[in-house]
Image (cartoon, rainbow, N blue to C red; front, side, top):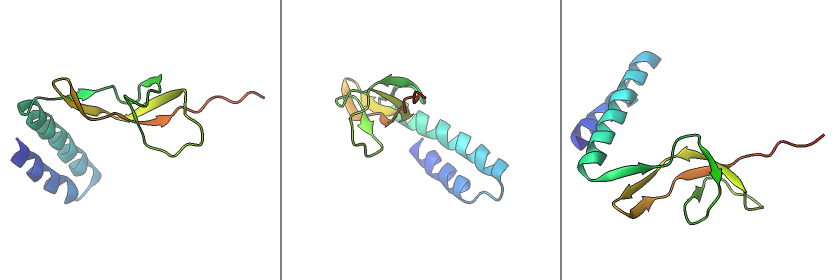
Length: 99
């Protein structure tokens, strides 16, 4: 599965047009998911989900002057069993400003 993902990566990087690149990226995602499953890895969080920020559960993707209350998941985390290998990467959710 990992060997297939590497080949799919080459196709994605060498694609001639946007459609070919998109097809190769779909195959790459499938290959990586298969390789992760075989190694007992699971994903943590949902892309674009908004959650209360918790430094023990999230990795901030942006430098901030003030700790955010809420964040949006940009990249899901990875776990094996009960061990978190990579925290979900998040960015602060900007508050709507009052006028």
